Amino acid sequence: MLTDPDCLFCKITAGEIPSDQVYSDEYVVVFKDINPKASVHLLIVPREHIKSLNELEEKHDSLIAHCMRLLPKIAKEQGLDNGFRTVINTGAGGGQEVFHLHIHLLGSNDLGDAWF
Ligand code: 5GP
Ligand code: ZN
Image 1 (cartoon, protein in one colour):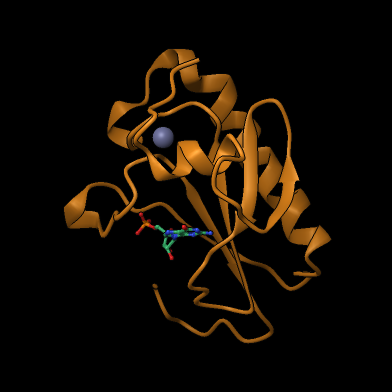
Image 2: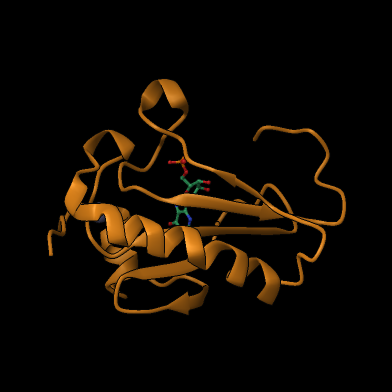
């Protein structure tokens, strides 16, 4: 599995940099965003270093399906019974700041119409 020793999220998923983890398995780590935009703001981060959606290949299909199916399970565990929002920023123009693919999972009692 590809990782990048200089990548922040590779260091976090490897446990070299601490994070507030809520879930982890062989493929992904889920931890709290350091600068939360909602009362629940988690990042679903594959352990493999994939820079963004632009670098996804067919070989990643099962990993992506795994992430998608994990989202509602984590949301439920977090008490988000009324729904949740997912965001993936891609590239500088899409607001991506950390170039290791991740899915934002956001929720609260009143998320409103903010796009984050
Ligand atoms: P992006 O803009 O790339 O989609 O999102 C990157 C996210 O990572 C931001 O919401 C930012 O707050 C979060 N983040 C950046 N550095 C750290 C860190 O060291 N630890 C954690 N937990 N989150 C981080
Ligand atoms: Zn990485």
